[in-house]
Amino acid sequence: MTTTAVLYDVPGPRTVRRHRLYGVIATLVLLALIGWVIYLLVDTGQFAYRKWMPFEYVGIQELLLRGLANTLKAFALAAVLSLALGAVLAAGRLSDHRPVRWLATLVVEFFRAMPVLVMIFFVFVALKVQPLPALVTGLTLYNGSVLAEVFRAGVAAVDRGQREAAYSLGLRKTQVMTYVLVPQGVRAMLPAIISQLVVALKDTSLGFLITYEEFLHAGKLIASNLDYDLPFIPVVMVISPVYIGMCMLLSWCANWVAKRQRRSVKTEKVRVAPPGPGAPLPGDTP
Amino acid sequence: MDVLTQNFSLYGRGLLGTVQLTVYASLLALALGVLMAAFRVAPVASLRAFGTAWVTVLRNTPLTLLFFAVMLGLPRFGLILPFTAFAVLALGCYTSAFICEAVRSGINTVPVGQGEAARSLGMTFEQTLGAVVLPQAFRAVIPPVGSTLIALAKNSAIAGSFSVTELLGTYKPLNEMGYSIIWSFVWIAVGYLLVTLTISAIFTVLEKRWGVPR
Image (tube, rainbow over all chains, first blue to last red; front, side, top):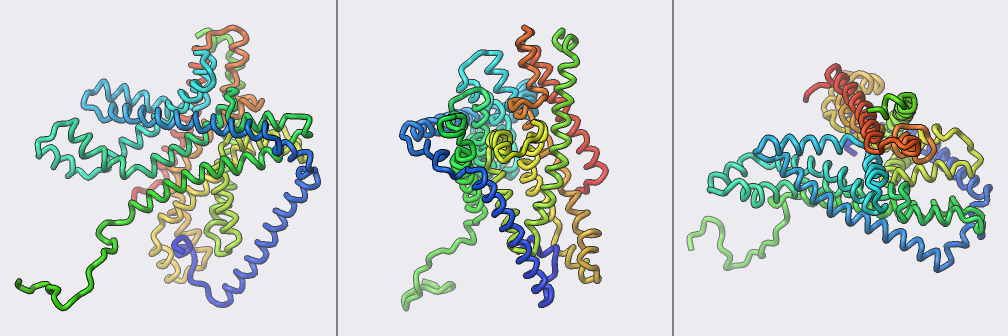
């Protein structure tokens, strides 16, 4: 492990034994902790059939699925729109015209500094729109501003020679941007872009606070049902793995892309034909 | 403009609530985050696994869901606390995952040669950690922790929807009293800017004082 290398020496036999002892103690403590939580859950009757009964009903399953579909719908809209807004704002920040640059900077800095929820509530309360547009607008403004910074950083990180070479070939400003800088910049920033989309996915749950009928809202409806003895903990136990799973899947995508990029073309293994009697050797003159 | 002058105490209470939430949750997040970072680099496998699970789960949980679970779930186990304490708990635990990652990557930025040199000089584990590795890691950690704490201050707005007194929640009584919604939101925005700019100013000073350009 590289993280421990700076902290510890390679342990000797006595230290190994001591570490093993610590390991056993820590495992026991953690198991005791988990056991205590499970005991609390059982003791307060969270595994009672009556509390889990609602999940057997088709209507409730449909309610949950509809909630999930609404969450994904808000996420898809917010993702597409914030990518578009990010592109526009990044173009503004990279503009050669000073007023455009200032305006874009002002917008980006303001929306990055505001809590998303303030924007969502502002759109929802002041402009009196439906919950979905309010949620999508808030998420788009915030994530679009963050993505604009990501795009800008990506374009700025492209090697300077690329830009100079493109200009010296006689490409115009827009062509240099669209053919040379943006493709490379976006490629380099893809992990950061996907990570920002994870944030957008997590923040769709803010729709719950403005009564958008998304996944958490569906859960709340079930949880506050007296017929099933307020199955609050079961609902949390059903909903959180779905949310965490979705976010982990996206994060995993970001990691995969990042790992793929670290792979260099030069060091990749190449299939070479086996040497035969007729194969020319380097240096042979044909 | 009237909105602010006529409801100064309301805004003041809201701002104070946000600052309180931010400060307490920051302290909790820093303590838990450093503890978890220590777990993640510990030579004990089960502690490492616990730290990793803690970070992975909390980083991928929507904060609203966490608030929902903590505010409405913990009372089911007979744990009754004031709403603010629950909010601090939720915010602190959530942010601790990000602090943990910042601290861990800070430790990773210290070159291995530093630790090796310290050990070859005959320093003990405590001396290596206290005099060589952690001071350098601390300097690298200041900027990411600063931006994490700014995010924490912004996230504290969610608490307002769970009956905690804080800045965003002030729009509701103002709206009912018939004040202009736009202006009441403008002052809320100014309040948040005040909080986030203060945090970033504090961290700029810290970085000037302690940070070392590498």
